[in-house]
Every structure is written in structure tokens, then in C-alpha cells.
Length: 212
Image 1 (spheres, rainbow, N blue to C red):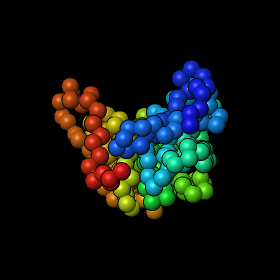
Image 2: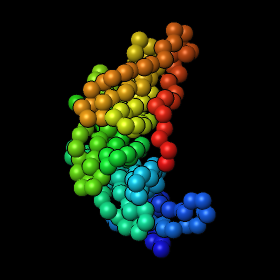
Image 3: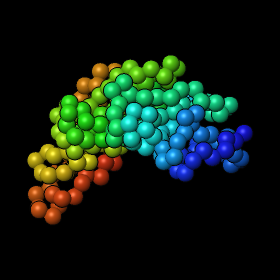
């Protein structure tokens, strides 16, 4: 079954059968609007698809949304929104889902009033309720914590490509405990030359990727 397009750049998600390549569903958000960019990010786990629309505006322009769809039926199960979302957060930029927990980033969120410091949100997949919000333990403005992320078991790896260690914008990767948000590890690539200090860390998440 397929939904009709809604508006310019509203976005759409497609589900295909593997390995035949046959399209099973195409779906749009129940409240789709122009420019939402549904499908910017997507992950499938345990019969459900989590899909980001980071430019949707339910809480203000570009606040962002995420949606959970049933892969088998194509039905929308939940719309996810952060409890403290606001315009410009870009919630839904990156996401992951595993064992009943969905993680969604809002890398432009102003945590503690720090512009674009970024945050990630955890949701219960069954209920769609937010269960936690995490950020960098050492946040600063323009870190964009949540620019990349990966969930693996009890750990979440999160990229912050503009985080400053001892050199401007070297970036960092944080590994957080999923249950508590406590930092287990932080790694950054520090350069000493003026030219290299202007380069951002390419956040290659080293956690072993689960099979999907």
C-alpha cells in the first residue's frame, strides 16, 4: 500500500522486502507538511521502523519530529517529540533503536541555554514516551552533540564534531551509559598546527554495529 505525496519536500519512507527488493509500503507522517524531510534518518529493529523528520515544525520552525511505523502493516504507531523541544532543535537528525529503546538526537538544541550544544533523547518504543534526556558532561555552545550517534547494548556513542578540547573544533566522541547517561569514555583528536586546528573530527563511531 502507498500513501500519496503530501507537499513539497515533506518526505516519505519506503519499506522493501529483503532480498527480493519488492516494495511493501510507502508511508508519510500523519501530520506531514512541506519541508519536513521525513526519511532524513531511518532505522529498523524488531519489526518497527524509526524515521526522522528533522525539519518538521510541531514545536516551532525546524524543531523536528520522529515517527515509529509498523514494518509489516505500514501503520504509524507513535509520533515522538522531546518534552522540552523548541524551534531550531533539529530533533530527528540522527537516531537508532534497539531492544525497545529509541534514541533520537537534537544536535541544535540549546541545552542549559548554550546555543547549539545539543542533546539526545531516549524513548520507550512500546509507549512512545520519553524516558531520558542526555547531553555532554562538559557542554559548551556550538558543540552540536548528537550530530552522529550509535546505540549498542547498554552504551550510546555520540559525536560532537565542534567540541573544543585543547584545540578549536577538534571534536569529540562520547560513550554514555544508556541507563544513566553517565560518561564512560571521551575521545578527541587533537591537532597542534593552525591549519589542522580548523579541521573537525570525523566522528567514526567505533562500537560494533549490530546486524540489522
